[in-house]
Image 1 (tube, rainbow over the protein chains, first blue to last red):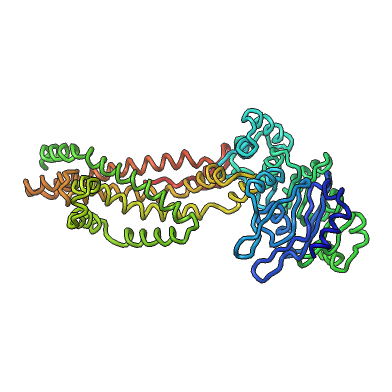
Image 2 (tube, each protein chain N blue to C red; image 1 turned 120 degrees about the horizontal axis):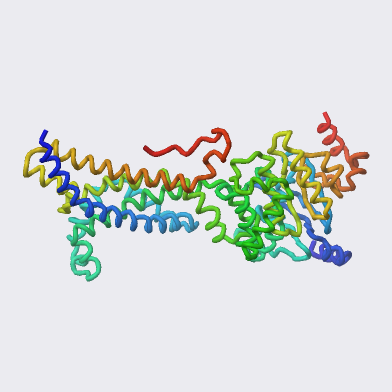
Length: 271
Length: 243
């Protein structure tokens, strides 16, 4: 097992170091239920990977295992070539070996959540500067300036002094994307960013995400938006029952579904 | 109606207000410190800490404050080692200190339960977002968990503070001449319980009214995100006002 892993690593060492994110053989169980059955994934700079799958296929768990909001049972995650070190705890589970390393890496992997998770007791502007000031230790004035620019970019600058509960879902999600951008992240993780939105608000969020893809941001996007997956992403990954069912170019995948599962999945969506 | 008697009684009882406030303030303040420690112990994840706090809450929440006060004031002096302790005895022979200790121990039990509940009620998503942005545990607690938990705790905690104001009246049974003690003395001297107790009751009411208003104001200041936005219709319910 370890020998085969070593040869696999030796076979293409250059790729491993350049990948913005690389996940190798990730497994995760919740109780008896195996949610991830050995998933590998590689995203290079500028890649936009859409992760598709029906509910329960493990796509959100995969994303949450990458920034260790969930601790994977086994497998490795590298961000910009740096391995997140894990250790075996006494009860046999894996835990992060160095929480400071995890925190530093998380700061490079900004996440956008399905339910926005903006800090409700802070104004939008405060939401945007909290992490840059307190995690990245950047000067407050500089962060405020950047925050205002980002809010202009996502089109909610006039709402900068609003509290999140006072805004529509679409505005909140755009604020959440701006909050993620304020970290100047290496990779952005989107966990079903439009699933909690009213249909008429989905467009404004997708437009922002599309513009991020166009400027070459590295993004992992768990989504149900087939249009986004097909037109914007550089790769589509389809998960089925905790395994990578198919992976490929979006145009190719949608035109000629490589597996029966994926074919069925998109047919169900178009119904 | 004998207005002069009302006025003179009112004045006599009011003169004891500073003493009532003193008991209340120190009881509540020390209780808050103890409650913070208990909450931390409970949340720390140590099994021993959890058992200790559970037992503590069980005992001090489950028995009357009056019993606790009697045990501390009358009971503890039965033990020789306490009477001979250079640290404990100066505290435990003084009825004032005894009352404060009893109140602090009692309110700590209730408050720690309030704090525990409000910490647990902080939405997971808010904490997860803080984690996902790389905040270390203490920063996360300071910027996200604590401010949210504080707002959640305020309504219940203000009730606990008001209960403590009323509990200061128990000090009168261990010879303290605070407002209730003073009122009882006047009542015994004059045999006019209605007038005297009405005066005391009115002062307690006004005191609690101001405490409730104070908390309502703090709650209002801390909860701008729960009020309607400027120029927005009343679709979000405003913070319910106390009293």
